[in-house]
Length: 105
Image (spheres, rainbow, N blue to C red):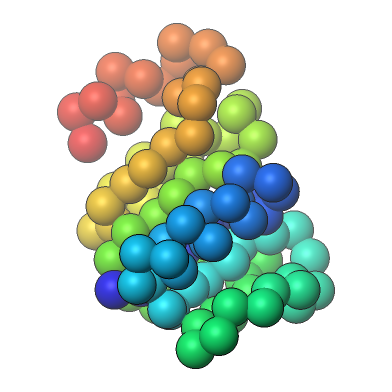
């Protein structure tokens, strides 16, 4: 299984550690800068992306949406369109805009 972590603040780091403990060893990390994160997870492959479309073209099985709340709905909708299973950090959004479309995706 390949997981894309979108946002690499404290929540994103926690999700990578938890998924690694569950046996996931292939990760993509989407962040604003291409700086390689300091990760010490044995047997884990990860690639850093700065563009969501590029990341989604890599065929990830799942995506963790942990970027700023104002970007959750747009990001989640694009991940679903790319065929990813999804986990969205709370809150789902900062407004009601786009939630109906997301629920139909």
